[in-house]
Length: 230
Image (cartoon, rainbow, N blue to C red; front, top):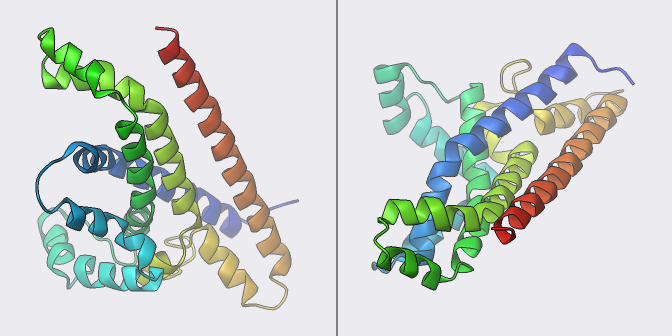
């Protein structure tokens, strides 16, 4: 089974976009999950609704909003282009942004569940012994929620790999520039004789997804065993 340069390009671009989307959004995801799990300020329900909005809205609507806000004529997109030369619309960077936003709710939810499962008494004991908040988080909370962080990152990565609607609306389907794996499969199914190539790419997509799940399970188990062994 051989792949054309265009097919390999779509696979590599999807891996690049998904990886960057997860790495860029993970620190914010941990922070938001902490606020939702431990915060006591008013308005958390609104933050929770905004975080989960991409799961509820049609992906095309999310892509359209991104185009308005982060496009070259958008308030944020125009400012970023003028100030640092960063362009999102119809670029691979926009595909990464769309993938990050679509996978963000899954990431936050997994991390939030892990945080809520941590016994607050352990953190309180550390604070009683004089540990500062950042030290408590780094030495107690973070190791305990590590499996949840890994699960959230893998879920977001899988969502990013399969993202189609928001991506194609925001950055179009330009071969070699913005054509990710799902977009390439869609394009191949629109032309006669493209079914075989589409099937090959679908097989690669399934293989990547299975590998990601197995790696996530292995890493999460390893981390959990190390925590128990302390």
